[in-house]
Amino acid sequence: MVMAYKFKKHLVIILIFIIWIIGSTLKWWNSYILPTPKEVILSAYILIKSGDLIKHISISTLRVFEGFFITICLAIPIGILFGVNKNIYDYFKNLLGFLRHTPPLSLVPLLILWFGIGEKSKIIIIILASFFPVLLNTINGVESCSKKLIEVGQTFNLSKLNIFKKIIIPWALPDILVGMRLAIGYSWRAIIGAEMIAASSGLGYLILDGEQLSRSSIVIVGILCIGVLGCLSDWLFGILTNKFNYTKEVNNHEGL
Image (cartoon, one colour):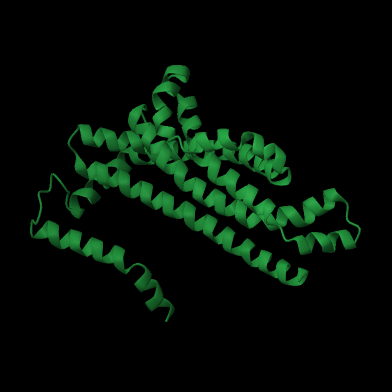
C-alpha cells in the first residue's frame, strides 16, 4: 500500500519523463528546442567531472542560505514585535504592504547601481524575496495564540515573560516554520533571477551561459538542479512543520 501510494504521488513526474524519452526517440521535436535525455545526462556528467556543476551549486546554495539566515534574524523578531504590539504594526502596515507587492527582481538595476554586481546585491534580493513570508506568518502565529492557554498560564501565576516564552512562542512556531518553508522557495527563485542578470557563477549563470552557447542541455541541467534543491529544502521544512503542528495540536488539546 505504501509503495503504491508513493508511486501515485510521483506518477505525473514519471509520465513526463516517459513522454520526454519517447518523444526524443521518435523525434517529435527538434533536439535544439528540447534536448534528449542522453544529451542532458552527458552534459551533467561533463559538468560534474570538470567540477563546474558542484561549484555552481555550492555558490548558489551558499548565497541562498546566507540571505535566508539574515531574513530569519530580521523577520522573526520584527514579526514577534508586531504580533505582540498591534499599534506598532499599524504604523508600518502600509509601507510594508507597498514593499511586499514590489517584485525584488525589479530592484536589480538599482541594487547594481548602489552596491555593484558583487555579493551584496544578490543577498539583498534574497532578503527582499524571503522576508515577508516569514514576517507575516510570524505575526499571524503570535496573534492567533490561544487565549485559553494564556488564561491557564495566568491562573498558574506565570509572569508575562514566561507566558511569552512558554506559551506564545511555542504556539507561533509552526506558523513561523510555514513562513520559512515558503521563504526558502522564494529565495531560490530570487537568486536564480539575480544570477542570470549579474553574476559570473552560480546556477543562474550556468543557465544563462548555456543559453548563450546554444547548449539547451546545460540549461536543462541547471533547471533540474534548481528543482531538486528546491524540493529538498521544502521537504526538510515540511518535516519540521509537521512535527511542530502535531505538538501544537497536543498543547491546544491539553489547554482545552
